[in-house]
Image 1 (cartoon, rainbow, N blue to C red):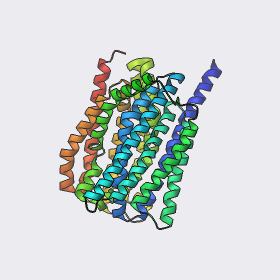
Image 2: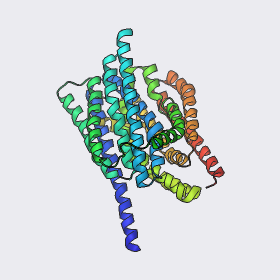
Image 3: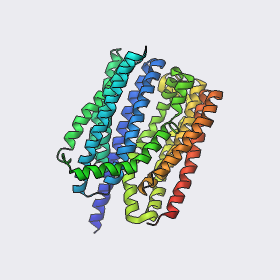
Image 4: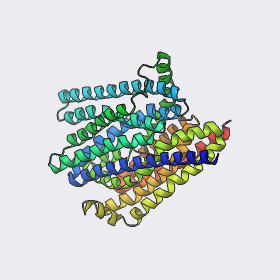
Length: 426
């Protein structure tokens, strides 16, 4: 009995360690990639790249909402044989969605070239071909986490993000870097990782699941994912919408500075990404096994995991912003405005981490509508208070708006969770 318990504990902590190692490597490689681009590209070019990269992340985020998050929550409850068929059905859906979005983007690029003088058709076409493997790669990694295979996710991440960093460094060393080549380098690294991922999954995917399974999988994903998609759209034009405001109101150069400073905050990504990938299936299992009592206990534990390590990381940024920026960019981004952005953006992001356990708990209870309502509040805040702050205070108003928005959405999420728990019957 004791030996069995010890083995279970070893396996559990080994899984957590692989998950953290994966997210640590991915975050470091992503940070290094973006950092060298921000440091060695001119500010305007980096701003154009940042805007394109943000648009890709928007599409990936919608994919996560419609397909990947429902996949994690629904797949965590299945037996091994059921999961194999479920994975096959979802893989077909993911491939169809990625190819559809890529094809539509190519058509938009070609039409823009004919109809609109000066349209960035080359950049859009390159982005279109890059986004297909990028989306499929995101799904492969999520599938590995859903079946509690963090080790394979780590191996795949080393291939994808290591190759991404090497490609960018080689292009910069050859003085050949453009926005188009930067996006292409990211897309090619994802393509190689997709091929490796299918090799890792050999024998684990039922290639031709039954028609009934495919239809049921799509319907179940849609029933959960539709609210998540609506929520994500609201979030990208609410909680994550400040970049659009900076680009539209203040211009590409201001966006380049803003994004470069925010890159420093990517040091929080190992914690944030580990939580987002590792914990949602466990929230679902806690709720299934122990109902709201077990879920409440899980929320309290996860709250500490989210907030305390993040607080340690942001503290030097808040106290010594100039030193941090000088160390990162050798004087390129050390103005008073840049320091202001770092201090208040760090505080805003820490507030955001405190909300994560509440959102995951709402998903575990099958209440994605709550996330949508929270993000609608964020969107309304951004388009009213946020817009006013940006027009009257410029870049300083952007990050003050982020702090206010973070506090507002945290309060709304807390109230919605308390209400959901109070009426829950499990």
